[in-house]
Length: 77
Image 1 (cartoon, rainbow, N blue to C red):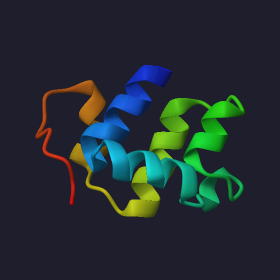
Image 2 (image 1 turned 90 degrees about the vertical axis):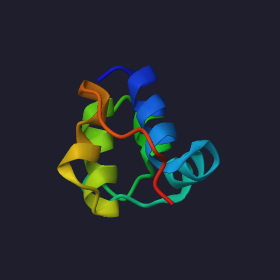
Image 3 (image 1 turned 90 degrees about the horizontal axis):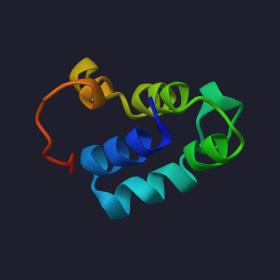
Image 4 (image 1 turned 180 degrees about the vertical axis):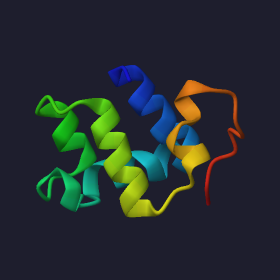
């Protein structure tokens, strides 16, 4: 996953405002307690960060892999 794909899938999954807020504020135990945004800034693989967000938010497998195929692009509310 590219950095641009990470931010795109965050926006598409959660909506731009909520997605960016989650990325900045949600503590991810799978990433040593860092937020997604911090982990990406610190060089963590974007796919690993996305996987940690999906796990923490209990997203479906379809949502986890939405950046690799054509699935529902409706933001989660």
